[in-house]
Length: 501
Image 1 (cartoon, rainbow, N blue to C red):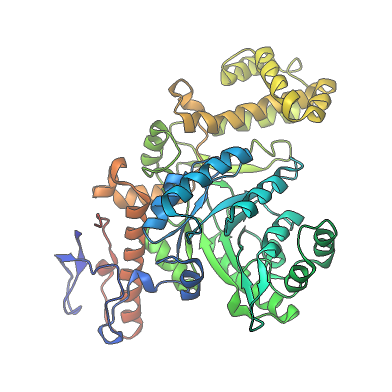
Image 2: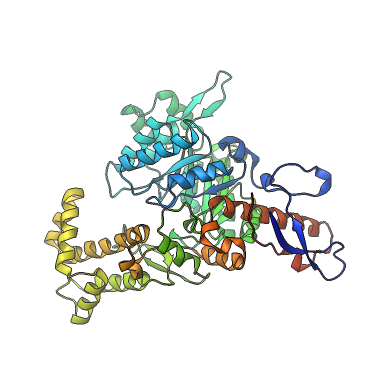
């Protein structure tokens, strides 16, 4: 790859623009030449444990945005990839696992799938864990957990065993995605006795596995989720990361654990080399990207949706009601530019808060609702009713007796289909696309403007990752030299995107 960046030979005067060839992404340097390569960033125990070349995760994006193809491409590029299996039926997830295994081979390292906490769908979480354990899925990224569930504990404990020398082995690895220290502490600590006893009593794990689980963390990989697309607490990366570091120390002191065994990674807002370098400088064991991969070639998002993402700036985002937790006021971060989804979703929430039913709405509000739905309210309710009769009759019965709850279900259907339309590329509903997006997407677009990565067809997860990693290594090296007393000019900290072979 050949790109241009700013560099000065002496750093004693103004920097000059020169063309240079980036060093290969390989460990080919000695400690004397001051080199920093992407392979060296992050925790080496992470790459050794999970079988990747780089401490970099291509994160799971729900309902197949992170496709099997994306996982395969990530692993082949030396990264860790997670399949966006959340929201899919078990049989659909199984088909995705088939595709991944066909390309990578049975038992291949460096990949996993998503397990999302779904208390509103009794039995679903258990069915997915059954599938993962039966198929030998060795890594699970656990998301949306506010507290431990028996199923995530079962997955973690089912992979525990003792080697002949007495050491503990893990064949299942939990990556806990959290944005609060109180949630992180639960995953850093051993599993609660009550849950372990319950699992043993119903035959889900053995007494030996329960004994081991009572002495080791539920998860050794904790992902700090900062300001990101989709469900997010909009946390700033620095304070969140330091909060989890303190939580790790406290939990390990309380339970007599080794703090070095628990790795804390960082995601959210990582869309440029500067953000990646900052994460590693804070001590992140690994980094995880999400929003920027939605515009990648391997993404499950439609071309129309990816084009919208490629035009976004850092401020072209908004919070909108979440389809799955509409009544609770939970929000997701989405793309604002080019869509009306966030505005329409917020107005639906205000109407739901102030009106008892559709009939109670003003004529203007009714017109807005039916315009957004794209059909008469009665037709939308009948479709909602038909779906709920097969998936959640109890919820349907509540809506039949309560017009206010009926209104909520119709609004939830609209919010759900916003993401569906974006994945399928329904151009008649372009203004209603729900595209999960954080500020990293806009920062990435600004950075790659005028470079080979500006074009959508060159945005593969491999090219995105290698540019971020190589850039982070470049910036880390310069900062280390500056910290050792060299006069490094500001312009040297520029890094331009290019294409790697």
